Length: 449
Image 1: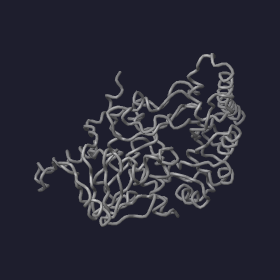
Image 2: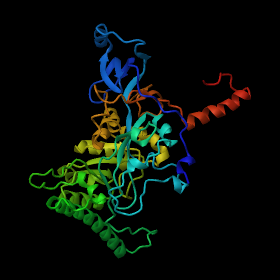
Image 3: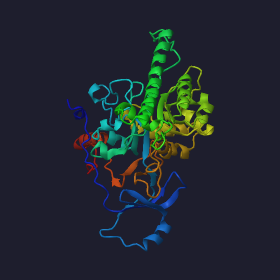
């Protein structure tokens, strides 16, 4: 069975950038610095060559001689340019149709599979990708799910013929899904509290055993390099922090562990264990993060907030617990970014999760940063994405207003300098059914080209 046949993106992928691009007269929002009204943004060879005021660029341009046929000119008067937004925690490319099991490719067999790389399962022809990027989301963190250690997440750009083309970073760490440690006593729970505690203990033991085995494996190989390689434990090299053998290259903490946890007890248990292992932690979810801020700050934990448009967690929680979490994290000095918290087909709503936070204490600037530069920093790709800066990837959007406002339209998008076709299944359906009314004589406008 060819699972990708269930839903395929039939738009043609954009070719690499061949001509310079000059976007003129927009208000540029670099995110990493002040806004630039009446700007000129220069793109070449897939990179941002500079963000200038029109007056400054006029002086630079007088000294230049463009090769024929010259740059592509875009007049963006009255519009805005932002870095492409980043959906920080998704299963984009791994999950297509909820009711069709064969299109779910985010959960590998086995509960401890650190060697699994999500990037290798990404379907570049997923119909969800063009729908998502049409709303200004041009990159995403793609995470495996299921089990206790389901594998390695990646960062992708939402354009490319193959997953290799799409990969910005093929591996950025290790995912750990920490078990609930507090028994659930709701009416629907059929497992006794005693058994729930046993199950939690078994799951935590399995996680701890995986890491202790990996440490022992590396220590054994340090003393005896002839020991055969084990793909499972080799995959954990990047997240461990151990002492190197004399005269050999040791392990470094290149990657974080992304720990999925929401409850207070989960967070405390997971972060305390990770600290004992000297791991770098990014918390995914974090609904109860404000109940343990000192622990998070002490251990330099960042948080991927998995959605703001959620119900309060407990009966006695504030009604706006989820809405206000980003603002409270900001006030507490805890680094964070905002993910959508939605099912995969609705990742296009990522900017509105940030927009909701602005109604509950987060500034507009911080909300936009939470889906651009902060997301890039937490995912480890801020050297390429997240802001409009010289030598970063030319991955950006031209909009009619703030991208986290529902009424804003994305009029143009570039990924690594490639101008992206913003049509998708939904826009095609829109035109299809408008055509019906044109044929009935109820619309006088000409068909869209």
